[in-house]
Amino acid sequence: MELRAIKSFYSAREGMVTLSDDVLSIVRQVRELYGDKISINWEPTTEHYVFIENCEDGTERLIFTTPELDGRAFERLLVSDSQSRVYEDPYDASEREQDELQAQRDEVHMEKIRSAGEELAWSLGDGKHGPGYKQSIHVKRDLDATSGL
Image (cartoon, rainbow, N blue to C red; front, side, top):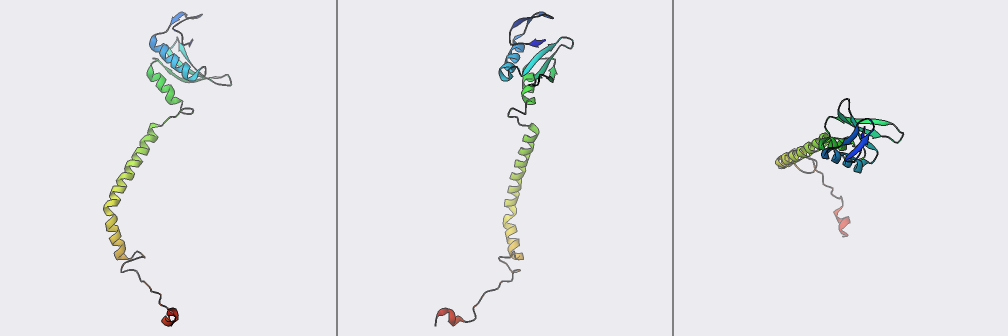
């Protein structure tokens, strides 16, 4: 039996049905957000609420079932709709946060060893300065030719 955003309605199978305020609130929120694309049904045999997607090709697809219709079920629906909504995966967010913290730690450690590394590079000769580097100086052969004398 499909639940509508109406407090009381008549069903041929169940007779007069009255929804509690909590259930009615969730049904209204789903209707406002998704329209007829998603429906909430009551399954009397299992006594579960069933969230169903009504596809454009006429098929119905099960999203999930829940024994209680409350804010957690609505939140679960929003999280499951990661295709069309802005959804941030908690695992990815945690990974990015850990990467940022690791980069900050690496920078702190690099600051500590940077000056020692520069001194070591100079003493070993890094190609610019230091005793290990063989420098050559270009001297023109004829000094008088450049002075114009």
